Length: 182
Image (cartoon, rainbow, N blue to C red; front, side, top):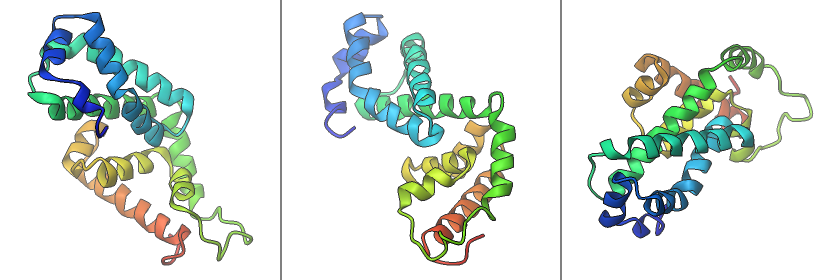
């Protein structure tokens, strides 16, 4: 977002609040990349990230009048929070809950003998994490959300967020050759 958020000034925010389509388009253009990246990191699937991107900006257009923050920085945080919430809602839907739990159970023993001793890059290791675990890692370690924020967004407890993060870190360390795999 560095540099892009500069293009969104107070006037553009006020015009967007009044429903000005050019100002809303300016918001979309300024934030689409960071919203898509956040959604892609959480959801993994490009089509899901596109859906989150669309849902996020539908919500931004619908709710911008209620936005009370001041300046582009608070707007960035507000839009990213909407995007994270939309991505987490997508994960909770339909088959994702059962699939994640099944994958979590399989994850520990799924390393083949050929993979033992090989170091994965962080990107590949993150891709191996179940969706919910990856979401917690991304939201906490990259986006800077607290465990309380994550618990609130996911409709879970703080201990859920902490345990997901601890398990994910242990797996990542194991996959990256920095300790025993859990």
